[in-house]
Length: 194
Image (spheres, rainbow, N blue to C red):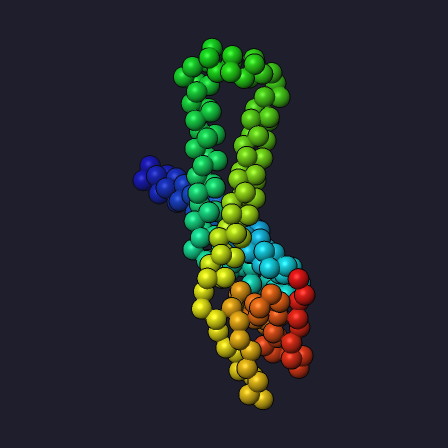
């Protein structure tokens, strides 16, 4: 009897650990995708396609490199989850009113699929709206920050506002032009004309 309890506890523990690992993996993949979207929107405000310059590692740390991206991710998930739970609560607590509000669709077989699909679309829409907002905020912050100087090995100096950087490139706003300055190659500079 005692061995049976130990075996049951061990099986339950292993199942819970596997579920937590799955949830954390899904959340991390989702966070990386959201980080890619937000990073793209930030750089696209300056006419930069960040996918041309960044590698996979840059995007793997993107959600954690800027607290605002992580905050938007958590808020997006929380709002979508809350609205879904509210919808399910209203259907359970006030079935007649809910049925009227949903035009009787809640009695159709396809309605559960429609409900979850709608919330996925809501989540994605909110993310795109948030990413656009994040890009605009980031651009405003960059334009209001102090300029920096970059000195090269031949003592040449570049001045401008740092938009950001990847592992291999620094993006500098110099006047109205955006410059992509490689850190590790023989190419001295790539200028992006807006």
